[in-house]
Image (cartoon, rainbow, N blue to C red; front, side, top):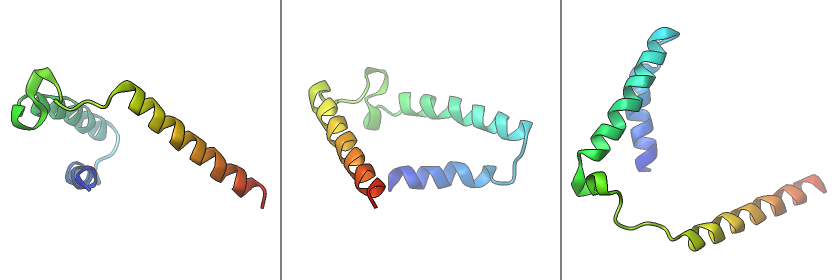
Length: 80
């Protein structure tokens, strides 16, 4: 939900832009977002990074489960 909100917030002003102007705004947002993230230590812990990281093994297990679920659904869809 938060991601969708920020997507609309950043995307709405750029809907009418085309060509070079769209590229300039995209590069601008690409520079602004990391600077804001680094300068809000109450949310992102600043330059030290996020406090609660996902452990590597837990992340790998989750990716494997999602991959297997996707492959299962793809296989079921192909058999129809």
